[in-house]
Amino acid sequence: MTQFSRTTLSALGIVACIGPVSAASLYVQNFEVDDSANWTSNDSGTSDILVDYFYDYSAIGVSSAPGGSGTTGFASS
Image (tube, rainbow, N blue to C red; front, side, top):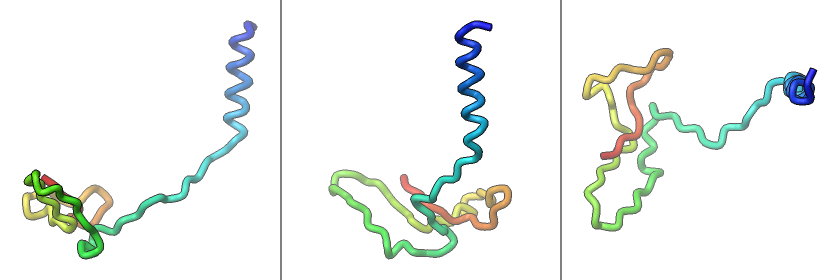
């Protein structure tokens, strides 16, 4: 067995012993609740960007995601 193989097997063994890692959520947004009043858009006045914080995607024929129930979300153009 080569040194590379031993090192690789050792590393895999260490990773296997660590177990599952959980992560904390940094940001959560419920797009089914209209909280657009809580958001602010910074506009320099030189662009024509439209931002809709509570856009209903069913208006353009987009159905809800598999396992999801709503069709609202963030949209910008």
